[in-house]
Length: 277
Ligand SMILES: Nc1ncnc2c1ncn2[C@@H]1O[C@H](COP(=O)(O)OP(=O)(O)OP(=O)(O)O)[C@@H](O)[C@H]1O
Image (cartoon, rainbow, N blue to C red; front, side, top):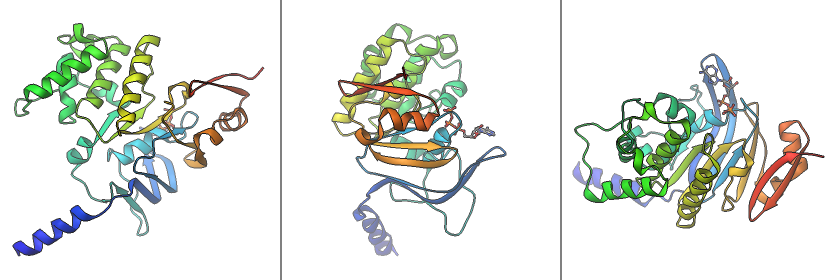
């Protein structure tokens, strides 16, 4: 029996994982709303991707499916693997991810102090708990990130007594502190002022250059880091276009996605949308 277990483990370890996630024929609801019907979508390892779409197109729901906050409707031919596996201990999965979303910000415990918010990233938990252990290195890394994000003076302030942008900085730190393999970010710069947005972009770009993969969902084109290589357009729960960033991010493509006249300006690898003249 022991040797069987060992060989199973060895098989698992030696499996080469090619995709962060592979979804095939996935249908999913939020409350009573059917968001996806037979969605097919996958993202390969190392392929930093931005998913763009108008309000209500299903971007947040997609991230919730990846992080196992919601599950698809059962169907025999529905396949949904993350890092090559269809079953996960959710804590183990989330320890490989760094997640920032509006829901997290709304639902995060208001009494947790800034330092605890940061440290809770090591366990993907809300607040920290007495059974959780943190090494001196863990704590130093959290302190360093607070300095980088300009929030070290708020380390002892409860989350509920911070401004929206300050909360967001702490949640970004929480997503980065444990060195995740992939960042799942939902409109990460919402609520950040210009300086904090630039600091955030700088931090994320450095991580990407060191190999951290980004999966970004947003309608804010300016928050797409230059290192992103693939862009997916989503509308009404469907992928309507998908390709290399340079080919996808054109004024006419983005105008068509959002249904209004958009002129895209590219500078230093960043894009900015302005109303078409
Ligand atoms: N709790 C809920 N109950 C019912 N319907 C919901 C719920 N949350 C979201 N929806 C619906 O699911 C659909 C997809 O929502 P989702 O939040 O994934 O879109 P999104 O692309 O992230 O939008 P946004 O850009 O506005 O954040 C929308 O039609 C939305 O109204």
